[in-house]
Amino acid sequence: MRHVIALDVGGTGMKAALVGDDGALLHRARRATGRERGPDAVVATILDFAAELHAYGAEHYGAPARAAGIAVPGIVDEERGIAAYAANLGWRDVPLRALLTERLGIPVALGHDVRTGGLAEGRIGAGKGADRFLFVPLGTGIAGAIGIDGRVEAGAHGFAGEIGHIVVRPSGTPCPCGQRGCLERYASASAVSQAWAAACGDPGADAADCAKAVASGDPNAVRVWQQAVDALADGLVTALTLLDPRTLIIGGGLAEAGEVLFSPLRHAVRRRVTFQKLPAIVPAALGDTAGCLGAGLLAQDLPATTTTSTTPEVSA
Image 1 (cartoon, one colour):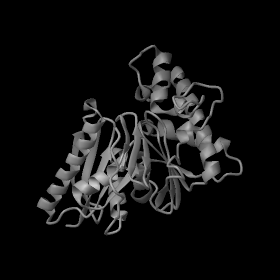
Image 2 (cartoon, rainbow, N blue to C red):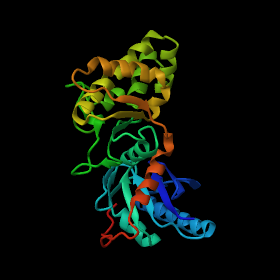
Image 3 (cartoon, rainbow, N blue to C red):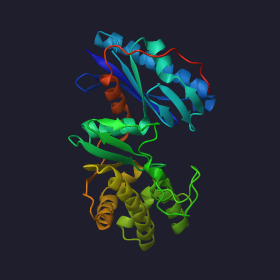
């Protein structure tokens, strides 16, 4: 059975699948990144994991995978196949595409984790059928993926979609990026967790607890939640003014609150638009499988043969 390898690398764990040409998930597997052993060990673990998946496919499906796709966090040079930087993994300028191509002997595509997840949501998830979409996962931080006619725009330098660093509160809370008042300092799951923990006096409280308190009518929770929603709406309206998406897909941990988030968010965005066309605002459909499914799509998009540059020296 013709298939591809799909690999989604996170900070602590990896999700992988063998994906058939019809989109079926033929085999799934997970593995720790081993980041506690350093960046070289992470790269070695990725290569070994991919090789095992390659061997499994050849043994169980009559032929090896025809291509592989891998999604990684941080700064990614997709054109050159370089994992440029990832704070959680400690690596710099890793020629991951060339290393995997050499190890597996098949074409390999490398993608940014959020853009890859957005690709899956746009093609086969919540944005299916939309010619223009914006995918915004609300997790530890906030990122974005700009979908255009079935592909995701990386930008001239690989930074397109960084909506979390739109300044929504000038002179506000400092952000590690060097700016003040960035969206993700107010509307990410981690920002809501921090605000609710302070408001309720429980250092262990998180965004999910805040959402439950909102649903029960707690006025302090409603205040904290609405502040986050207002900041998020400000950032999203800036983004939709620039991009004019047909569908706005909200994912990540905060989206798990369901209508506790989506009802006030739709209202807040609606109140802010003037001449802009209001997009459909919908929850992501693929959950934590989006990155893996997107990596499979990257692999399936590759031509039968792919030329890669000579493997440069690894600097980790």
